[in-house]
Amino acid sequence: MSGPSIVANRLSSVKPSASIAAKARADALRAAGREIVDFSVGEPDFPTPEHIVDAGVKALQQGLTRYTASAGTVALRTAIVDKFRRENGIDYGVNEIVVGTGAKQLIFSAFTASLNDGDEVIVPAPYWVSYPEMVVLHGGVPKIVEGPAATGFKLTPAALESAITPRTRWLVLNSPNNPTGAIYSKEELSALGEVLMRHPHVWVMTDEIYEHFSYGDAGHVSIVAAVPALRSRALVINGVSKAYAMTGWRIGYGAGPVELIKAITLLITQSTTCASAASQAAAAAALNGPQDCVGIGRELFRHRRDRMIRQLASIDGIRCDLPPGAFYVFASVEGLIGRVTPSGGVLKSDRDVFNYFIDEAGVVSVDGTSYGLSPYVRFSFAISDREIDRGCEAIAAAVKKLQRH
Ligand code: PLP
Image (cartoon, rainbow, N blue to C red; front, side, top):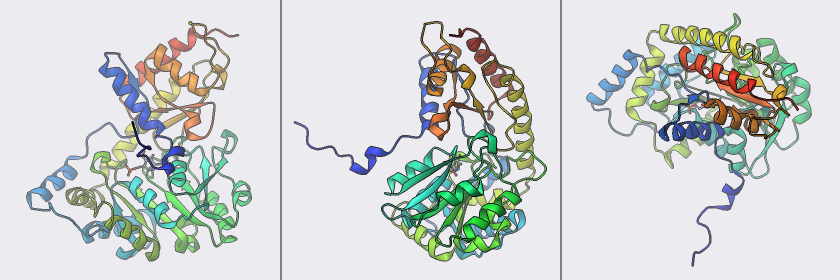
């Protein structure tokens, strides 16, 4: 006889990460012998630059193999302070910085540190899949506010104003955005800031992990630089995963008021103790070292973005514009809804389209529903030109096989 479930009640309403699940599906299909193009990837496909790897190896050889301070080494936190000053025009002290095992751990810990049961967190949709689930995990209530294609997938000041209640704890902003690539301009950030200035109980968590993947002239601006008065209630989240192709090193960082940074650090002391010592040394080398690798990565991704859009936008039933940032195309598949597959099924949702692309084209993507806006599909262009061409051609051929009702 089995006893009660070992799994806590609070997990019953938490969904697994759709992008991680899609990647696992691609890996399983490949292992089963199918040729798959994986458009679900959320990481650069090139290796970590050599000088950064060398710094990690050297750290290990020199004996940096022990625990570090829980908030991160002073060397790395100093490199982060310099980075904020140099790239974002924001002045932080070392004691306003915390280093974590990826940006993801810090977002999670920030919610652990700040949310009481029933607290609301405004999450503009489309959103990175993890924000609402993390909020739910902490007894919070995600308040999803849709940013439709007509607003460039962005939150408007009016929509923000009407979503704020006395229970609102955070606004989560993600610019450049995963999954749409939307980037908030300085003016747009100032307008959102004006709303926040009228509601001093609301904090802003600004996830800037894609900052270096911005393809226009204006580039990325942090809301803390655009609205310095928000600094006292802002947590800036960033990391080295995407900019330096370091996803597996697991180093992210947060910057904000000391009270919050101390609370997050307390959680680290009672959970992971600290981020990996050698990875911290490598991250410091990434931030302090030559930055040309960042620009090279951006130009490569710009070229891939243009290549993917050229092909996808010409497919009947798929609509997409050039994303201003990040490395994803968030394409409307509204034109495919209602079409009939060769086996007689009707595509009723973007989830059906996602499944059809796997079955018929051997292409793994991620459905827009998982990001809070449908009917869309997210395609990552963090893969080679050859794979982009192969995947787009396979999708075009699969779409041709669909019949209209
Ligand atoms: N924030 C966003 C918007 C992301 O897309 C991701 C990863 O996909 C992360 C944070 C997590 O980054 P890290 O590797 O630093 O945990």
